[in-house]
Image 1 (cartoon, helix red, strand yellow):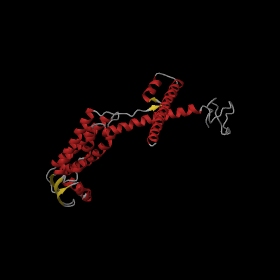
Image 2 (tube, rainbow, N blue to C red):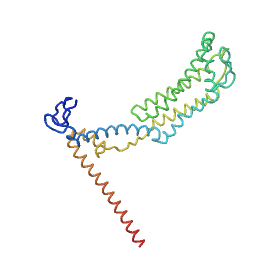
Image 3 (tube, rainbow, N blue to C red):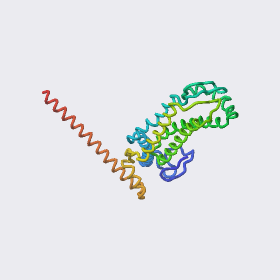
Image 4 (tube, one colour):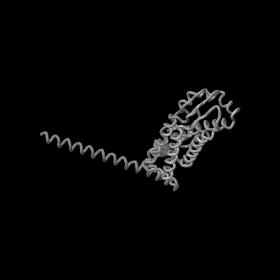
Length: 290
């Protein structure tokens, strides 16, 4: 059970009446205004921290011209994977294939790639098998890194956003270029014979552009414009400064009531001015109509 808000008596389950057995205070309405103000303070401070996150996410995407450009450069590499990534002649035990192979073709032939092909290749052409496996694995990681990079753009303006983006950029470049090099350096063998296609070169180029634009954006910085928040009519920064100076709740509350009253007076003045303006307009209209 709770305690009495006035005397602090611990209320038992038998103390079901609204009055405290010791001091007689009305438990439900005692100091209700102050309790409501305390709850309002907590809610407004929580809203401030939430709004800061929203402002950072907003800035990460549209906080500057470069940030807007970065959205497109982060997505463009996806287009390249639908073009022929390799031009290859693939023989058994893989599913036989001859021609340009895009990501769609790889997905359609996934059963042939995940069957006995790679184990057989590793057994008979070990170096070539390792190179092919490394190329496929690094390409898959580069695609995953590309997706994660785009998602993590939302956190670009967070305290550790720069370090996180730099790490993702390194992973993207290392896996993208590493995948292409592993395929190019694969020794001639009887299982897979081919070269990089247009899609692979375009994918590498767009990934480099993606990383360069992101690096420049982070280096120049993105301004974050925070929405002004208030706590009891006091700008939230001023409210925190008051607490830091050691002002008591009573002192802060007195200032809050004063600010809230000033805001209320300003609203009432505006409404009164608007009413007077409307009344004057109606009077002129009546006079004009005779």
